Picture 1: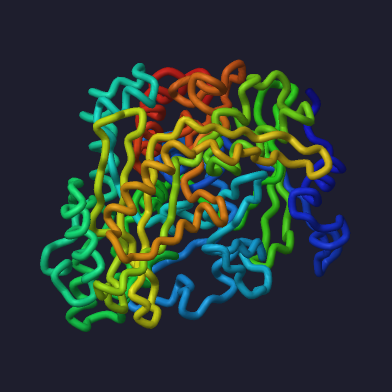
Picture 2: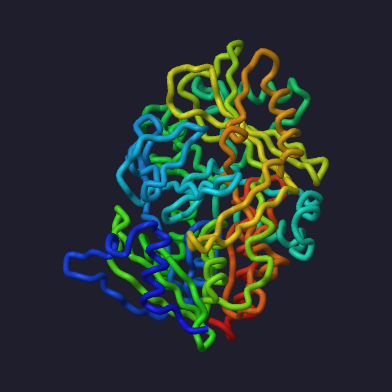
Length: 523
């Protein structure tokens, strides 16, 4: 298949951005410059999959270029890097995508390379992060490892749980420096909602435990002592932690990767197309953009090894566009299928009998696992509300093993792949989570299932799944040098856990295998 032409690049980019060809390509000196580069390994995305890949390849002496569409979000004590819900601004949204939160549409902001994009689907929307560190910038941080029984019931047994447990999950836990919250913090005034949740869980007859988090909790204790302005202790951490102390991918995997001198992270580099070249290598078409989305430079990057780690929606849509337009011929038939929502449910919980307090400390302290049945295993946690008046309300979140599956379908009019999601696909799991949430909330409380009002997920999984599109190390079947190492590789769920730890552990396992078996042949 011939490489993408300049004209195809311009047309595809325009379709992807929703702008005319005349708009984003304006430049002070005339037309946007086009440059060509060659790199040994290119990784698209800098989240859990991309971060792991960059670090492990670099440590093996392999130079890597990481392409990240978003910007860096450096933090530190008393920083003002991330936006807050108390004072929303353009930093929230990726180029004006403006997702509704809990059914409430935000005010319009100017276009900016912000943190969050809503990818609209038929029946389900996907919430996607943008920035160096990917989803780790925004996720609450619940770092859970499934049990062997639940893992083997939902993930390929050939992944070998014993080795995943003894090597790869442990490696991720060490990298993220996971820890549970200290009692000194939990017993403080602003964590009353966490204590009430734990008490109610036990009263309902369920187990409760502290949730491991990638957080240096001393930062929160310092906030209590007045040494820093509140960020954890007032719940103002749902869209990034300004004070630091959160061991997100940018300050762990990516920072260590860059320190090797083998990794270059190119931020604000938005990939528009991927293609296979005549000589069997890979071509990546990229727009280097300003923070308002203006295209400053176009790049055509050629590589022998291309790692797709752009997140479930990003990776799947790029590959499906390439397959539909024959830019990558003979892609596996299952591309776009086996997509799952991880069973996400987000509730508000209002209780006039108990005072949750305001503000509410966060991000997550306690959770309740119901993992005895591996086919319906689920987890329910309490999460803080951002700073608000005392509404006697907090949040409950559930997720787990769902057999419901959707698929992406290419729409030629949009030049994009769009998710189709059956309306009742998660109904069995949703009913069980709702029963548990009702029991925890107790009589006299008011629960609002926001996911039923506005179906969306923050934990998209699948689309280029292992055993369907890829092997267990992320090799795309029939395409040497093309890999998927992010949530798209997962088989529609991650065994009753939020996905981050399993995505990272699978990427750790995959990079070990690729370096041992593919390095001398492909890269």
